[in-house]
Length: 422
Image 1: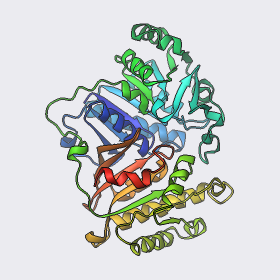
Image 2 (image 1 turned 90 degrees about the vertical axis):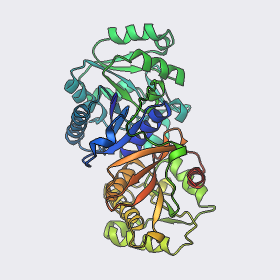
Image 3 (image 1 turned 120 degrees about the vertical axis):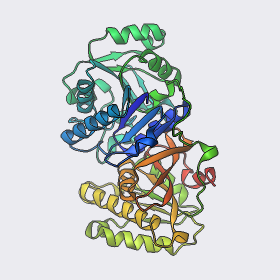
């Protein structure tokens, strides 16, 4: 294995794996604390460990990230990639800075680049400031995120409260001066965190080449677009579109994300698909009962439909005082994960769901955990950072699953995704 990566949520893991797969690397996503047959890893170029640590307590996030890196080292990883969201989702306490500091210490390296840029999805860094589309991060919809509201845009300002390590900004002019000049600038910078400007894919390619000898890099999935694939013969090659398994069961979309992009995708799907909103009061009072009610609704629909179950349809639904605060957010995760498990592992295989789109990082983690999945095989891409993957549940059921960051994907994703694997 050449590369071992840790991702702070499940959608981030498939986001990175999709980018690596697109570069010609043979890659698999494994789920934290799930046993994986060593033979499954044989011959892979990269393994991404999916964690659920983005909003975990700092001590917990650090411990689990360090444990994942330790495991990756034990199975042969030579380089390491700490993957976080391209919108740098975090608070003043962490978890990006503390995790990077701990992994740097663990690996014995004195510096790590910080590259959240992902131009294909509108994330760019200029003069050390993170932009979402044409807006500074602090003016984007991320300002109102219920768990990690982003009210600043300069990465130095976001990192500084999280770490005591020095933070150096590497401007675009240096990146554009060439790989050799960039390498000299990176290697000559003060040890610590090196925030690097990038506004298009060619910048990411330059950064990836300039850091080819670095044992540790960090960023969103965009940085992987500059990696050079060197597939080797033999081993467990992850499938692409030509070899992806066939799935013929029922279909389902579940959305726990409150992002503007997902809300727009729900509205688009509502014009032609059955949709139903989670009853938040019922979910908090009795999550299992609400999940059962939703499952009964899905089963009552025409098997050929593609129903959408969601928790947030408009920004007014996001109410920390009770509408969508931590208690109801936890309840929504329980409802949606229980719903998916019920419909996928139902006693009648002919009536089971075997194709699922999940929107939202926290929800994706809850769903994969509920299904008892230990590894994901990367399949056809749907959009930058979004792909189909194949998995097997702990009950032996095969399922095709999309784990979608709330902010990613085309407007019609919930309608168009199915044709890619049918």
